[in-house]
Length: 106
Image 1 (cartoon, rainbow, N blue to C red):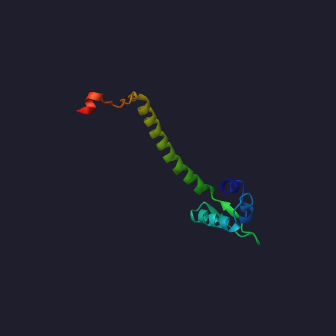
Image 2: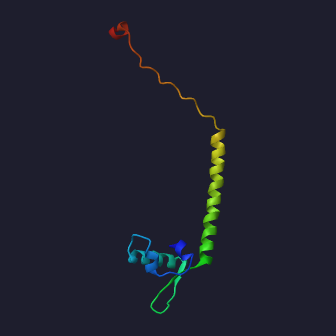
Image 3: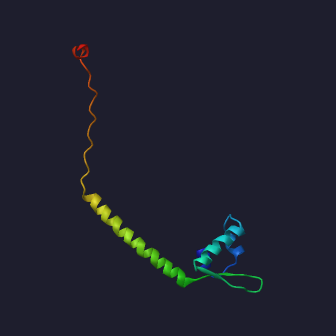
């Protein structure tokens, strides 16, 4: 829906077209986006087009990118640590101890 709105305003019906969900479900999604400040609705005669709020989306993207970059740095440090840590050689299992006939009698 966000990708579609990035190309211009659309009604709830237009946003619902490519999805196999109800118009009511799309409307609920739009309400969540509206509450988050990512979209607004206007009135155009009988139509109520939904508009993307690019400034809010840019702030959200910046916030996500900051955390994504922090986590990528941490994963690179972990990769470096794991690459420098020697891997232990697997140990062979000890074969079961069989008692000789003499040992079994005692």
